[in-house]
Image 1 (cartoon, rainbow, N blue to C red):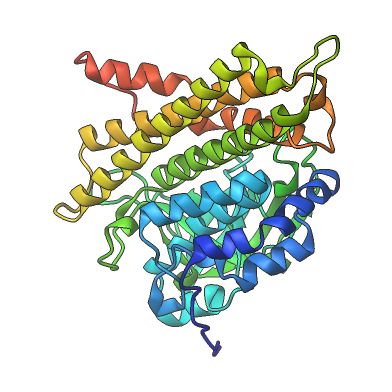
Image 2: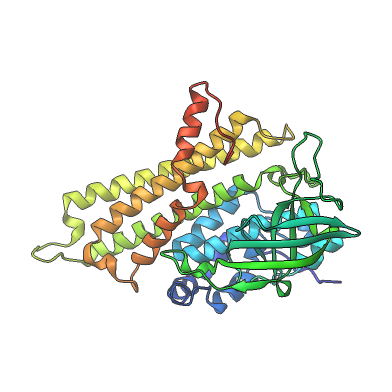
Length: 393
């Protein structure tokens, strides 16, 4: 299959700012419809924002990690669901660095090539080796972007043709990721949630679907691409993306509150909100908290990438430092969101306003695995000389 590759957008951050009004308007639509506004999807595709992390050889932008997280944060300022979908599609799309060129181009060689997946939703799943590929039975959920995706996939431990588990060199079972055309799946529209409603993170199932070997890769395996970002584990990509989404949502709430405080005169008071010493204190504190969390996370990200330039895999110390910075960013943003929501008073409760959707989106991010406060305890164990659990690292 031959696909003409387009020239990636040279300044993706400027592209996001150019479509900001559309994102703002589309956020209300997606919140009601349970999927992104088709006009928003088209704008994101035209700006090539779903392919930010893909190699240039596939037509991707292959942007530096620090640029990528800035783009995700800027998207989230305007629409958390759009940012979430771009981040999910970008992370999955990094898998193309593992595939043969023709297969990668078939799946992701144009802006309409978007893959979605979610974790296994049941134990009744199987990926069995057959000539030329694998036979897959799979039930997945939380497939963010499933409504506009063209491919679906997942990840599962492989069984050989005789039913025995396939083992890697270290003795662990081989966990293999895969993608298939969306038409091969049966979709279940079950995404009815508090926040990030526009992500359309629905469930899906595959039954005895053949997956060519060239459309699979070892999850968290070694990529042939020399860019150190392709040595990130999947969980590290999600952690950084969700940290940036959280920061963007909180920044959007803070920016909206500053506008509100200029003119809103609370009931039974004589002056605008901005004249209140309490409000002044909280705005300054929120500004500092977001700025500190943002700088801390981005510094940890840059250090992580720099270390990967000189080593094949990240050390435990590197992974611990990165996890702590990402978790801290998520919860610092949550704290800012709580403060701003309270300060906005009754204005914040209306779903058609600037606060309610962002607040619900922000609280939904914290409920995801990467937002667990248990990560703090895990990091603390390491810092205190105890063995940490490896989940999320």
